[in-house]
Image (cartoon, rainbow, N blue to C red; front, side, top):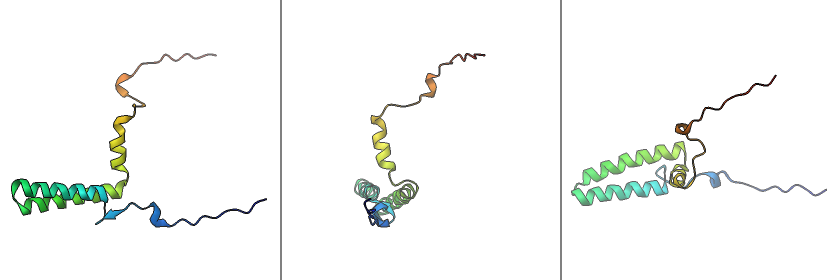
Length: 96
């Protein structure tokens, strides 16, 4: 009988990479949107406020489900398993 192999796994491997508590892609999205508002409207305060609001939303999304962006982007590729609008009433036959 062979000996059991033990693999050491660190907790940090399973954690998402974050910046200021938000996933990296969501953080950069909020930073870019803040910069766009700053450039378009020439308002530093508007860009900063939008960045902070988006950062708080990104932190909330990262805490709830770190993979939510990947799930949302991939959801359009797959067929629905259940569509409640296509309900067909099935006849149930009882046999004695």
